[in-house]
Image (tube, rainbow, N blue to C red; front, side, top):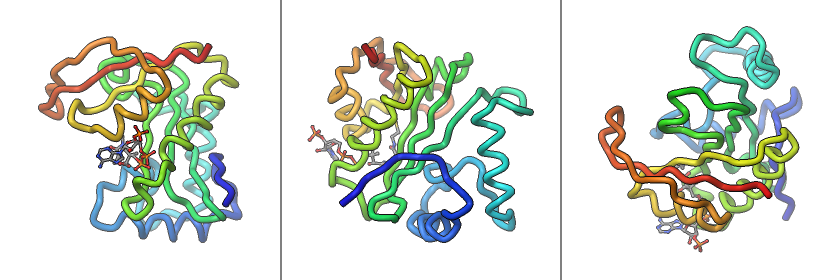
Length: 172
Ligand SMILES: CC(C)(COP(=O)(O)OP(=O)(O)OC[C@H]1O[C@@H](n2cnc3c(N)ncnc32)[C@H](O)[C@@H]1OP(=O)(O)O)[C@@H](O)C(=O)NCCC(=O)NCCS
């Protein structure tokens, strides 16, 4: 088994479309922020490339890399990496967000992808990562604590009407 976390390339169209099917009935943002029905794959790659380079960003968006997790060529999930924080991400969202397609959960994949993502963040020059999750999302806070995240606080999130946890992971 090989597991990798990387940006999409033009050769990943089939894998991306198959990965999309894993999320039918779920909120699409867990798979992609950029994808819209009817868009061509190359249009989406163009958006992702601009976001990664921080070019022509819409208001409120920060420089951002969308990385996909592949296991033996199949997309099992993704990690989104925000290169900087804005006010909204400082409140909730943080530097990284991750999701694994339902069928592939509880196999350690999110933990493995986050390990790769932390290295990606080190390579970007980041030193400390803010990572947030719902207080009730045990798999997510277990992952953060696995990487020695230090709990900053538990706060009420007015938007989602729930308590969230905010942690910092030091990249040493
Ligand atoms: C959160 C999510 C990414 C976890 O993915 P995953 O691949 O199942 O996670 P892992 O297999 O790496 O497990 C991570 C830890 O959570 C635990 N875990 C996994 N599923 C669990 C569950 N349903 N209940 C309790 N613990 C669980 C695992 O045992 C592991 O803990 P450990 O390291 O102490 O043994 C996945 O559930 C998901 O995509 N959820 C929807 C999106 C989401 O909530 N993303 C996080 C936003 S902050």
